[in-house]
Length: 108
Length: 117
Image (cartoon, rainbow over all chains, first blue to last red; front, top):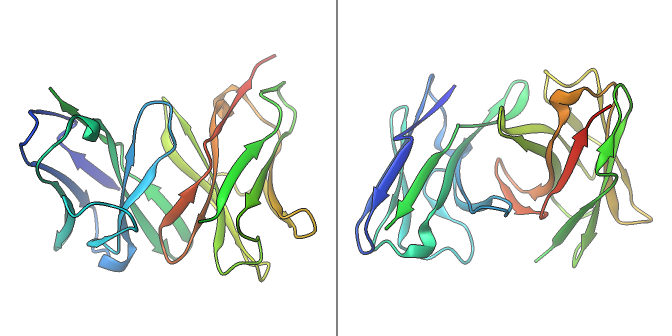
């Protein structure tokens, strides 16, 4: 199980957002990724292996982990960062990808 | 960067079969990638359906395994999804995606499939 918090986050331009994804059991950092999804669009990979930015992702986005807690931080928020954010876990046995329920980030 | 595009019927009658194709451009289905199908519905969020590798290795979501088939056509440079015995619960936006190790790097735009009598 992946639990994201908060469910909704409302912040202002220039603020820093911190999104949390908690796993129910220990997960290797290699197997955790973050995605951004805007309305009407497909998800976009932001972070893989818990802390590695995908190509083309600005350094305002960063990922970290501590035990079973994974964090996505977005600094210097811009209106275009308004979106749903999902964490995703990979399991080896059986091979399986699982997504959290998402955090809605609103920039007002 | 490789681009993906889903295609197929937007309406399927239960208990029929949902069939979608994912065309690969600026790349090849024989590239060193896993090719995936996922879906998203308001009730169930993002759900992974299955994946296949160029070697022919295939993995399915255990909850859908009995109804799903993923296949590839190298001559047409596309891969396909078949979901049998559909119900209204299979109504969703279906995505194809390509990934490396343990994440999904590139996604198609998605296609809406409605299952309705």
